[in-house]
Length: 197
Length: 135
Image (cartoon, rainbow over all chains, first blue to last red; front, top):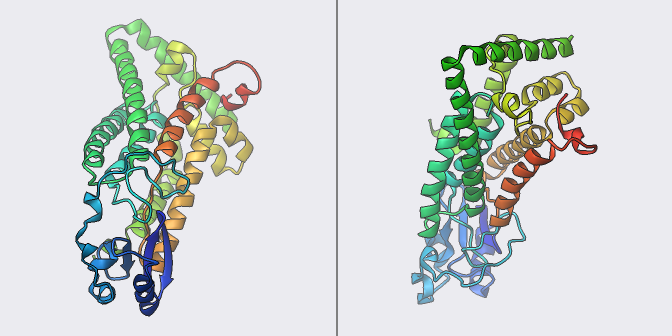
């Protein structure tokens, strides 16, 4: 059986079952370190995995990693997988919302010329960013870096989208403006087509 | 269905690949649906996405330097996304799960500031910043 374990915020392994048991016994892995093998639904503290934990008899297994007291200092992250809220040796919990927020935020900026789409992306980024922020504060989810990126880009995208939509509405109301827009649109199309020849 | 649950990254990559192929085939028709860039009109400045379509076209034709000139940010984003997807799919098949993706808080701010910086700098009308503005 191939096991993976988390050490210093990064994924290690694979190691065989016996090797992992030995690491637990020698203290190289602590009962609160997260481990995983194919077939498990999620990473679990070593002390709670029956096949491995028969070795660890210490009662300190009770401590749930997500409830451990938050470290007072912000440790400057050096590895790709490190976050500030969790002590060394623990992987951050899933950060799906934060990832989605960041993707939507970046998308909303890059697609800003199509405000009908980008406004939805921007709103999604901001909403998901705030929800994931609450979860991160409650220590239920990770990904604070991505949440930040998502929120900032989401707000920027939102401003851009509102600006564009406002201009479009203005074009409807003011026909001269609409004419100018069409001219520009044709010019841009011609430019692009001439480059493609 | 079990495959979907156990290999989500592969599924995602397959879907994106399919979508890209469809867009590539429908390229001309989609171009006609594009509105003008209002940001550019009002401010004659380039928004962060400006040149993105021309950039993708250039990549499709193999003109990578032109693509970078059009919109280096889009090139960077797409390259990172492709790299990430490939890595996750590889991990899924080799190890059974894709592993965590995470970005440190410092990384998060770097991404946000990077995009803002790109937006500001590409509008500076002197060389070398003009290298970031599309023609």
